[in-house]
Amino acid sequence: MSSTLAFSNKSFDSDSYATYRPTYGRPLYDQLYAYHKGSSGAAVDLGCGTGQISIVLAQKFKHVLGIDTSQKMLDKATRCENVEYKVGGAEKVPVSDASIDLVTVGQAAHWFDHDAWFLEMSRVLKPQGTLSYWSYNEAVFTDSDSATSILNRYFHGEDKLGPHWPQPGRRILEGAMDGVDPPSALFRDVERHYTAQRGSNQASPVAKVMPLKYAEAYIRTSSAFHNWQGANKDRKARSSGGPGDIVDEMIDEIVAVTGWNHETKVKVHWPTVAVLARKN
Image (tube, rainbow, N blue to C red):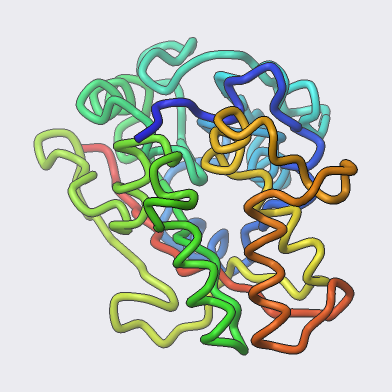
C-alpha cells in the first residue's frame, strides 16, 4: 500500500494530467445549478488542479477562488479575469466566515480529513449555501468488456498496480464516496446522484472518445503508476527507449484481445457520483 499522491511529487507531469484527464460534462453543472438556491457572488473550487471546474464556474459567479495543494498544478491552470488561484488545503480555506455561496470539489474529496473539512465548509458557506463534491470511478471501455476486465486486473492485481494506490483515498473513491456524508447538524437536503453505477442506467457525463494511445497516456497520469515507476526504475516505457513498463504490458493485452491498435478510437466513460448539500 502506498501513501504517495502523484501530484505532490516534483517529478509529476502536470501537462499530461491536464491533457489526458477526463472533463466534467454539462449535465453535472446543470444539476448543480438547478440545486443551488443562493446567489452567484462567490464560489470556491477545492482541489481545483488545473482549473477545469473553476473556469466553468467563472461563467456564472462573479468571483471564483481555486485552491489546490500543488503549485505545479496551479502553474498550469487556465487563467480568467474573475478566477484567483491559491495554494492551500480544504480544511483551512482563506476566506471570511459565511462569505461563500458555493463550494465545489471535483475528484479530490476522497483525500480530505472529512470531519475537519465539513466543519470548515459550514464556516465559509453562507446560510443555505451549496456544497457539491463529484467523483468518478475507474475507467470503463464502453464497447469492450474484455478491455475493461484487463484494465481492472492491472489496477487491482497485487503483482501489478494494486499495492501502489494511495490509501485510504482510493478505497473511498472506488466505494463511490460511501461514508463521506455531510453531517445533519451542519447540512440538509443532501442528494446523491449516480451515473453508470449503483443501478443507474443514466449515461455518464464524464466520457471521452479518444485514440487508444491517449487512454494509455491517461493511465500514466495515475498515482498508482507514478508510484510503481518509483519502485521499478529498471522498467522504462518503450516510448522512452526501454523494454516496456507495466502500462505497455497492459495495452499489449488489450490490443491482443480486441484487435485495436494505438490509433483506434475508443469510447471510455467513468461512473460518477455527485453529492449535493445545503448549509443549515
